[in-house]
Image 1 (cartoon, rainbow, N blue to C red):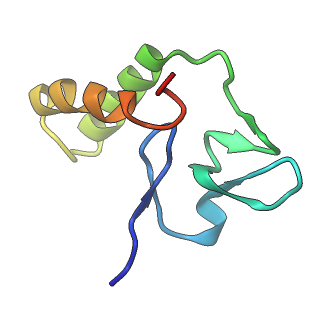
Image 2: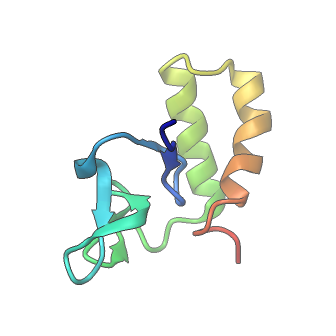
Length: 87
């Protein structure tokens, strides 16, 4: 059985070692993808949760992963429960 790992900032599926972000010591982060997290900091530290939701909704619609209505309903609930946004 394989473990599915999703970025705890954007929910991106992390498939390869190179998809993981890096901590400040250069080690791979166990929580975040390389698009969201590098060298121990978020690549867009001022990004709001609502902005992330809008970005992810756009990506899943563009890539035909979900219909617009489904994405707009489900993505906010997914994002709000990720480690970065559970504050």
